[in-house]
Image 1 (cartoon, rainbow over the protein chains, first blue to last red):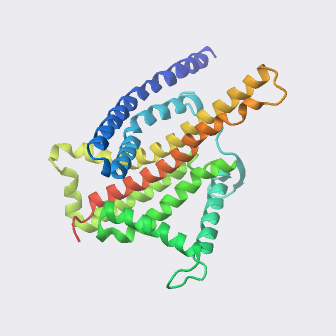
Image 2: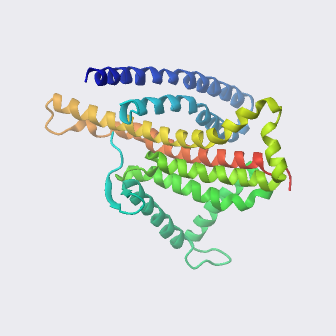
Image 3: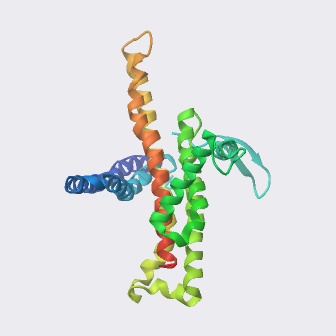
Length: 82
Length: 235
């Protein structure tokens, strides 16, 4: 019986640790947005294309963070260890 | 956070559960069917009605997107991209109306991603033939063969988990906000729970509307890029 509580506690901790993965996409998206600002200030007429590319790039860069979120969700709601 | 409610079970193949996601997917399909029937009702060669102009505008928008991203030789994929975009967008936005979003279930997005994956391998097969297709796994150097083989599995996985995770993450944040504001207003003994008015709308604008639209767009964009990478270079 105590083993289950141990697994539950470790899963909760693990879910928290998994969300550290959110740091990476934050930094990456910040870089991307900064570069986009530079590009717009250099070439203001290409703003629409730059915005579109930026949004798609941000969406793709988010993937690793979403993996972390997915692991966290798995540990909290459909834990395979229990 | 709960899974989709199960309404009833069809007793074949060991029981198929008919849950909220499936019902909502049928609602979305019906909605899109009715919408396209209404928009294309009594079409004319020179459009005079606003509905036909709107329909032509939407179709032209997707056609231009496909042509700019993939090239002219891929125009036969435009209907698939349109269907994918429309069902993904409506499936995410149906959450605003109080239904459960269909994209909050990984089965939905994984299914779309698998269709895309089969399509892109079929295109690669058709383009370069059997030996060419097998050879494409050893490019650029034969040393990378295991990584390319992992890529077969990781492509649909990444596509589906990205869409699913974004929508689920947004809805978790929204439900946390609603619960937090509700308990805050009951803690302050407000006669009317006035805190829940207006504040969630700002976050909902980003997490429900913008995120849903963005994920539908990214899903279609990546589908197009993957297919055109595997297909013929020029027409």
